[in-house]
Length: 181
Image (cartoon, rainbow, N blue to C red):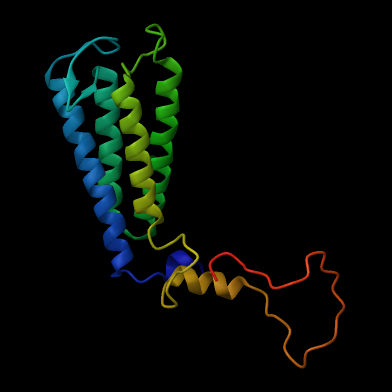
């Protein structure tokens, strides 16, 4: 049985994952619809600004498609919403790098990216990825978290029994201070 099968359906984690996907998807759909309402050219390198972001027909349609995928992920819920948030968030960060690469080149800037679009792509991607990672990635997960249980089941058991004398070469004698203790 996989962890995806063992995760309870009605947990706080699923709610956070769904909210992240739903709100992000709705924003992208609204942005795309407003961008198409201005009737921009499909691959125009000049055009309207919606909510401080430049847009064209291609970027508007791409935003609507990405938003619809996120909304569908929020409807499906579960681990799928979490995985989808992380993947789409990573794709937005990568699109930010694309925007940086084509900022000064109008012939290659087919999505009409400006610096505000690049910043939005980075910030939106990190926020969406954070929503997807919520409750899954941390060193201090609560013990009732199914992801913590999965990690501890995979760990090998440490030997138990009486302590044995082992000579360890320590180049730095003295007390150690591990991080976080």
